[in-house]
Image (cartoon, rainbow, N blue to C red; front, side):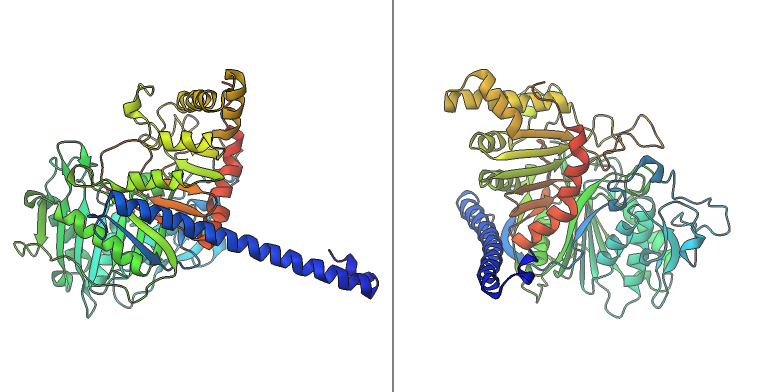
Amino acid sequence: MRLHQIVLSTVLLGLWGCGNSTESTLSSADDELAQRSHEIFEEIVSRLNVSFPMEKGSVWSPTKVTLAKDWIVQGPKELWGVSGDDIPATLECDPNAWDCDKAFKRQLCEVDSDCRAAKTECLPLEASVSQLGQSPTKMCLGMGDDLLDRYYKNLTAAEHELDFVSLAPPSGRFNTAMINALALLSQRESVPQIRLLFSGNTSGLAALVSTDTILKRIMKELEVTAPASFQNLRINLAWLANVKLSWNHTKIIVADGSTALVGGHNFWDEQYLGDRRIFDLSMEYSGDGASKARDFVNTLWAAVADRKFSSYPADTGRIPNFTLRSLDQGNVETIGVGRMGAFGANVSEVAIQYLIDSAKTSVSLTQQDVFNLLPVNLPLFRTFAFDSIINAANRGVQIKAVLSNQHAYEGYTTVNDKVEYKIFVDALTQKLQKSQGLSKAEAQAIACERLAFTSFRFSKQVAYWPSKKDEQPGLHAKFVMVDDAAFYIGSHNLYPADLQEFGNIVTDAAAAKDVREQYWDKVWAESISARMECPY
């Protein structure tokens, strides 16, 4: 491109015109992608206005968000592309050692050279702070430990209202971080009201342990951590589940209706802080979209039965619906989409279908699975987006799907990824034969090209965890992107389940570029080595 610097000025002038043309082309491409993003927004909102007019504002909302530079919450991102030898066997220190933090099980340090565990840095852990004015403790952190601080900072952002909604209460070090956060909040001049909403103490099993039992345990821990101020807190804790196998599966933290952390992460110690971590995806944002996420939480609370609800101080009753709204309106077009399961309208699964229906060139997926139970050949157990995916591929859209592994950490596996892939290929083959009059061989060749399915890898060099040779990496993300212009991040798996869900369809070209470059491209580059064979 620099050869024009040594040619005659007349040629230089000609190439200058070409240079402007190239710049214009690039700008035009960006403009076209931005326009594509807005088209998808308009199309989905228009269809949802027809399908769910009464639920607008309570279960789904067109809105805008503000995204900071580090808005993508993924992990453990330090492991992309590493060799097995570079994965530490453990980050945990000996709790009896003098330089081991007993609460967070990480080595204490002053500088990086103090750290004995591979791939760790000496960093302050904000989640260690439980008292006003306290400095965070420096520890040897690595391999996704930053999730603790992302979680803690969203909890401590509240000044007036705090919602924390998840599948089950946090465990281990995530529980410690929550206790520290609530203790800190109790000491502030403005102490927020707090609503904690889960499916039960164990996923979906609300009847096994009462809300009174769990709230009393939390308050005892707070009394130890903040004895002089814990009584300043007002807390509601509830279960949302019923006997029809419908329970809360959303993962939402909202502070003051202004900031939000929403996505797929469960705040469970062994799965997200242990030696064989689950790979997941969430997003952090502010603006009007945070207010709309909180409005959906109000809808969840409206479904809570009184017998599955407790309060501190005891017998103070329900905290009224939170109402604070963000002063920041946001600048990134987004559609907040929820699902109420047995308690109301199931907007998000329809919205995700509409997202895939809108695709013109590509659909990119990372999912734990797209089928629920064996036998996978029954339509009842296949993804609700099955027809949308097949129809998209039939009209020429390239489908790339990354699924978890059959031998992943328990609860994060696929049912049978190769059989599932065969079902998709067979369905598209038949569709192509019928719609385009192709022979079976011709249709199957096209189906194999348009449907690319892989098993998840964080590194093409690592099929099994080095520390446990019979266990593969687990994937828990719920990510759908179309045309590199719009995407979904949330709690809603593509496989069928009658749960409560929430996520965001972000229709913004710049945000899509961020998530493609920082997340999707890495997933696909490492996982392509495990692409499923076709023909099978």
